[in-house]
Length: 220
Length: 263
Image (cartoon, rainbow over all chains, first blue to last red; front, top):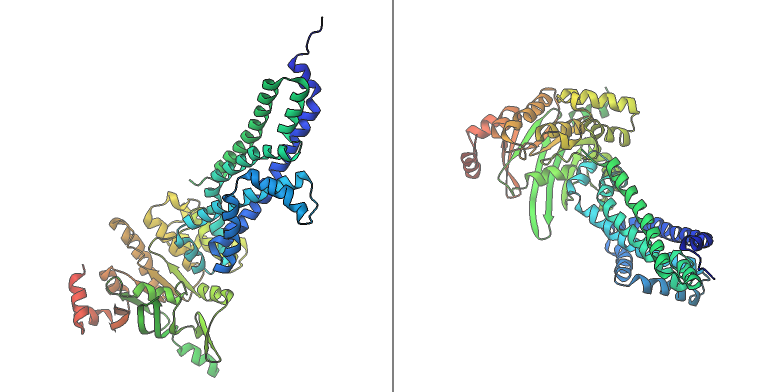
């Protein structure tokens, strides 16, 4: 009599596909968080200290992106880039969408943290003769980063979760890989739960990293 | 001695001519003239809103001003006349001029993420470009002078208000400024901590440091100053040696102000 294979057996068979999906998820989220944070810091600085005309394009970017669902953003990047004559892979388009999303959020976090610093900090920096950029680098940003960290961890985990949307444009990240395995094995619950566990592992690692840095830089 | 050297020696350290400052339509300084010689201690007094803190902050360009001129050691602060037009100095020049003055603030404004020592060395390393050993030695010298050498590795959050203010004074003075500005440095302190800060300032005055102060501590102003300047509604109403000014005020407004102030 035929005995259906155990879940552990199917998991073993699917290990390569799952591992590749896991790596793809980590790669696109990691890239988006890294690039988005850089974009966000620049945008946040301009929004805080720029003149009206410098701020205008960044304000437009941040407001548009924050008011749009990530899903729409990912689809827009996927379909609009080729329409504008830019040949880009699905992975590239998806990561671009996530990066834009991450950047807009980090921009507001950075602006908020800088504006929350007492104005006396900039004044005291200027009073000892530091230039604007020195004051920013040695006095304001180190203090702002401590404020930014907890919210940044939050945004980063949102990006990891949003990376599942890339399955819709055909990027074989963890969710799509899982769905493909389910289509073959019909073990729906088991593999979805397992995928959920893996996403949790990624996000928990980010949270631990954030907490570690927070402790390292905490002020007495 | 050359002619040029003679003229620099006789030159006033600080010369303010016809200073005008407005916030929008509100004129807060309406033509202020003030001269300070090297080694002078000058105290600005007056009721709040009279413009004394604004005047102090114009000297190191923490406030922009719209008219008049400030000369510090012969250099024009903030602006230059170019072909009859008033041009703001580039940031680099303003930063260099700011380093010629030191400032202590009402709220101390120590950098909370740096230790007491690092607060003092930051300017020495990044503005004066001193070598690390030199900067630390100089910072330690000034922390010792304000009586806080044993707290060198404490963060501002671990220090009392009076201690923070003394570190802030050390931070400013370690830069070897030619003029020190004190903006109501004891106003935010608990009464029992005021003395320790005033003693530090008194010591500096005895060393011959040139200082421009804003304070509400009239007894202290009387003891430490060479000249008291009474400001009223954006103008200098009366100025003179402390004894003269406090005992024989000429203007009725000063007489009234002195009557209403705790001595």
